[in-house]
Amino acid sequence: MSQPDVNSWLETLPEAFLTYLDGRRLDEVECIVPDLHGMSRGKAMPLIKFSPDTPIFLPISIFYQTITGQDVEMDIQDQWAESDMALVPDMSTAMAVPWAKTPALQIIHDLQDLDGNPIPCAPRNVLKRVIGMYREKGWQPIVAPELEFYLTRPNIDPNEPIQPPVGRNGRSGTSLQSYSMTAIDEYGPVIDTIYEFAEAAGLHIDSVIQEDGAGQVEFNLPHGDPLLLADQVFYFKRIIREAALKNGMFATFMAKPMRDQPGSAMHIHQSVVDIESGKNIFSCEDGSASDLFRYFIGGTQKHLREIMPFIAPNVNSYRRFELADNSSAPTNTGWGYDNRATGLRVPNSGAQDRRLENRVVGVDANPYLAIAASLVCGYLGMVNGVEPSAPAASELDEDQEASFYIPGTFDEALQIFADASEVRQALGEDFCQLYAAVKLQEMRLFHREISPWERQHLLLNV
Image (tube, rainbow, N blue to C red; front, side, top):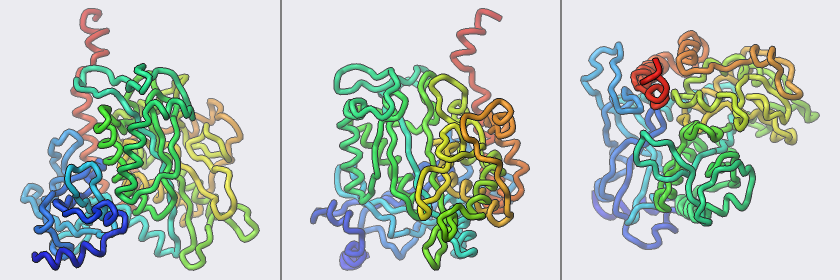
């Protein structure tokens, strides 16, 4: 490709990238796709080798891998014939790689087969499928994610427990300091680097707070189109990890990285607007809650247990729900008005901003799949007229907790998902079979491991 061709598409890139480039020579383009786990896969190439009009290729087997990289055998004819997928760049996602030593561009790609059809197991395509279901009804879903994560000391030996980071005062954080400005200032250089990287990438942060845990931080993102926000979460995870490394720390999105500290969530605020009018369909003309809002809540309550493998996708995810004095993670599918004891919360808001917050989602979830699955629950509720329970006015009692329980283990969650016919049909049965096979294999691999607890308490005592 000639240099004039390069210049023709470079000039169409977002203003934030051109500001970041500031007349410097662009060296490299990263062509990336999110895999089942939300990790970035793809290829990097010199600028001269990249063209938006020329697809590149990857084997479809990248979706047959567990989080450990182990291949999963599927009942698919010629699975290991390794058919290629075409990577088609979505140029609206183009943004800087702020941590790169020389100017670099990263672009999220869509995945198609060689006939131009969307690859059904690609997480971005799964979310697009769900958004399309809404649009067929004349609806546009709106979401706003909240990202919780931990900054930690570098954990070089996985056999050693993860430790909170050392702040500017030279001490390691241990106590719970919710909303503490002092605690945020302890990790100021990392936060500053995240803001610096986000600005270079053209991303926006609504707010940053200190969460309950030592070294636990929360970023709130602006509301918008689900695909746009999933892309932003995907990018932000890369940015946060790199900013932490630049400052001698790790950033982890494990749901429960430390035994005696709270877990990390990715709360998702959800609303739906009418495409033609732009009005929130969760509110009536007089400002009261609509039937569709009630059904959205009902559908989410009905199907939330079934989508747990997407919103709590790892064995570690379920440690976040363990009852403990310092755990604020919801363990139920109850709902209430401004009630943080329930898994589903209706925040205080005006009629146009009426929304439902799904508080069960863990930050270890793939953002594309978590948002898609959560939206599917509400969609099924609206089209089927599912009535919710009565709202909980306070903490749930034992009977309510039993009635609205969520699975306590990954094993149980996968068993429930196996019979979730409506959810599986909405997300795509072939995709769901592949996803379940990958997660079952991960669970088997985990159960093969011998833990330090077993060595400590069983080695010489049984």
